[in-house]
Length: 94
Image (cartoon, rainbow, N blue to C red; front, top):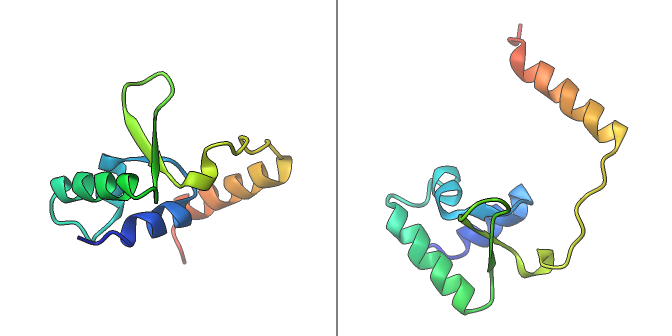
């Protein structure tokens, strides 16, 4: 049981994640069932919360402080940062 890994991962990513996304993103779990067991234990202890993903039946998990947080506002500066980052990843390093 690597229960500290999930809250750390959620905090680093800053996004709600499904159990499958947690499994794919974390090398600490050899089997998907361990992720579900840890998420259930963390939810029972109040360290993570769950909700249904919009327009889907998937359950996603996040940190309790995110429950009433507003969606981030769109900004041109952040959009240009994302575009530059995308182009850096698409062009091979020389």
